[in-house]
Image (tube, rainbow, N blue to C red; front, side):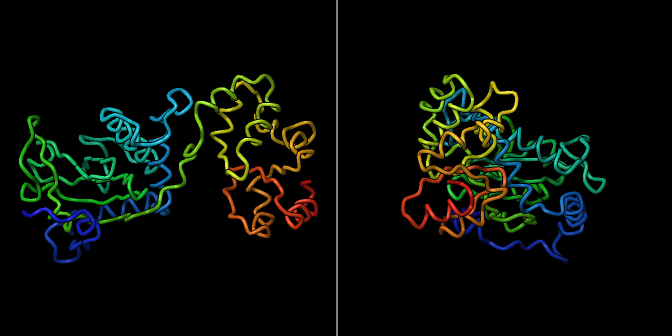
Length: 299
């Protein structure tokens, strides 16, 4: 079968609908997945990002992007994603990776800009169903679909006997999630060499204040703060008032606010809102901004 250009193959509509040879097998599995995870389009990207960050280990390795992993580590991302998705679906493991709608389902992942799902002989020998997942680095998107591993959908075997899904067979994928944006990479843009230096500062409050004074107007996720304040029993306390970083930054005309309570303030300043589990330090650039922050009790 001819290979389609990357953009075309990813946007080609699925032909799996009533009357398709795979519909009666795949539709009950799809329904079971949707029942187990009603918010699949948001749950999947969160699981994929968590899998990526668990392998990156930015604090220990200094790496913050998928492209910085070697091929073996990218395989680990796929394995982590499989475990996280199994937990997300609360689905048991059977003869294959999952049991869904009473069927044994093999899980296959591909990570990066080029899709390459490799199907083992024990799965395509009897044309069994597969759950496909993809973390598309170039578009920062997550995908999930179902396919029946029919030999005619697959290419030539490699040395291990595995066969890749032909791009021309992508039309036989029943898509469950398409091009769902992943959450922002919590570590993207952080100077990891400096971050590791900051972790050496004695005192959690001083450490947090210094970090935010160097990362103004940059949303910082709770997981990053936990890594920064790794030795603090109540690390979130180091961010608050009553002696925390908020009090240390205020004399410098820097407001430290949480997305859980102050998105309305950010919105009034014309700044993007942040996640409820994120903090951001705002330095007042103008008298108008200073007034807004002062009226909010932040300066």
